[in-house]
Image (cartoon, rainbow, N blue to C red; front, top):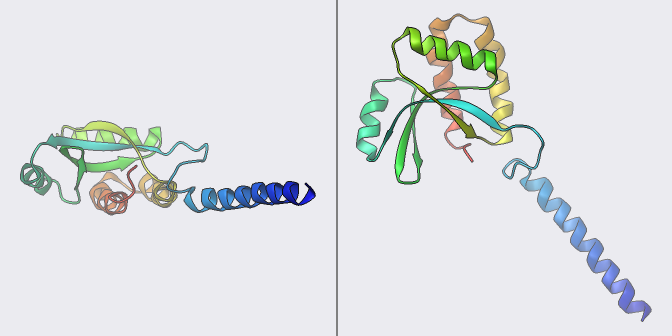
Length: 145
């Protein structure tokens, strides 16, 4: 009887340790944190065919095309935080570009990467927004949830 109880306790302990290791390894991909992993992506269109999305993407250097189910979405910018989102939206309005802000979920690692760019955005003028957004979008491409 004593061996059976020890075996069961060992099995529970081993299961707990292995579960903890699995959660630790997958925490960035599976959003177990309390942090909000949403960003505002600025979309210029949704297309049924990839060719049409690519044509629209050519009009906006640095944009990316993301497959979302049966559709292709073209994003030209991404922002986190209300100040950055507001200034980027104003920038696109000043260029007469119609954008649709869309909340998208991203990985924690992308949020960390995005936080490196935030000081650059707030300290620079709007002339280089396209370049910075192009770099950020390249990093976001594989980080959508």
